[in-house]
Length: 351
Ligand code: DOR
Ligand code: ZN
Image (cartoon, rainbow, N blue to C red; front, top):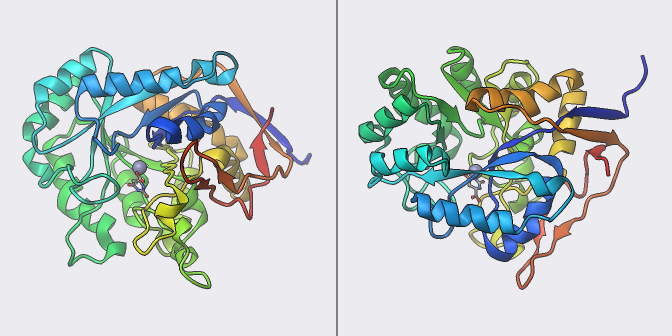
């Protein structure tokens, strides 16, 4: 059989992305627009994006930062609403019907970066979920409990038991995405209810397990939330990603932080994969002998779940062993370190 060194697929989308704002956004955005047609933009800015007006402004800033021509010019940011205890279902509905909000993002309070204004009791927000269920508006969930007595490696599994299970039962038609799944428990939960909910899978959780956080010393650039788990969980994620099941699709959770915020006594959670995201996924799919399934996972299953048309344009990946920059510089700030720069994927985007 001929060795595949080039692969052209329908242009993919990133269903979970942190762009930040200002100079950081301007520095990281081109990496995403080079590969993806659309991205679901996370609302956890320093000042969380809780209103349609704030989301529309944020979208305008992203669009202004796009190049005038080339692939990136047509990039479409899909905006999300940051859910709080004080959320008003009518305002969420209005933002959705006006075409500003694509989805709502649920962060349990204090689960991760800029989540202090998140939800303290998710099951209490019945009015919001009833409205979203009626509208067919997706709920994107950071699925971790935050109780200090729950081991950090168990937080996703406990969230599934305590919060997600009753949520799915109480709102059977609510469109739910369990974001950045990291456990076999999550894969099994989603697989057991086909069509009920979906899950995104990051590239980094397909590549590292929890040993990578402590290899020869503490490795802050491999620290993210949900934290990477044991090897058996990583293998379950790989199996899910290449399974061809339409309820598992691509979401990078690329999460840039200034290097000074990562390499610190209390370093931020987040792994910055945007510069090599499609290369990483292609490498994983090749290792799993499933390159023919990459297009479904990256370009078809997400639009299918969100009720959108897949992109019309294409993306070509090449196995050319291109080097990656170790750092991305940010105007007026510290640079951001790129995941896997020391061991780049063999695949990269052509052109
Ligand atoms: O590692 C993470 N980083 N996980 C999240 O949930 C948030 C993200 C961020 O915004 O930095
Ligand atoms: Zn995220």
